[in-house]
Image (cartoon, rainbow, N blue to C red):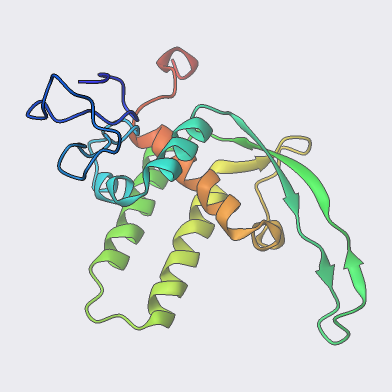
Length: 183
């Protein structure tokens, strides 16, 4: 075995011990463990389905309380060359989630998961609604202490937005918020 640490591939114990192969075959390498902590919710399947690199990003973000993002520019809807708002840097702080909000998000996720033969539009709409709700629950502007706005949500690049919100959710379901802050 090479290592017991997550993220490092282990050599199969049945591989010959007297010679080291130059290239490991698929049968010699075990699956890399999931670096995201186990949760007690239905979100676990989602976290397990992520690639290991993305899991590490989400885990790293889950440990943060603030997220610096760039809000994309806003252009006039008629004249796409007319800039209304330029890119701007914004810092959002992660808020604590209430039990009511947690259950609301869980119900939205479950409703989306149980759709039978959903169309692409239903899936996209459901995902946007779910992540927008997560944003409204978790993110507030660090300077103004106001909840993220609809416009701000849409101005953040989607992969960044999704990663931050997945991380906020992971911090909640994995119980990483120190209890002494809440008591």
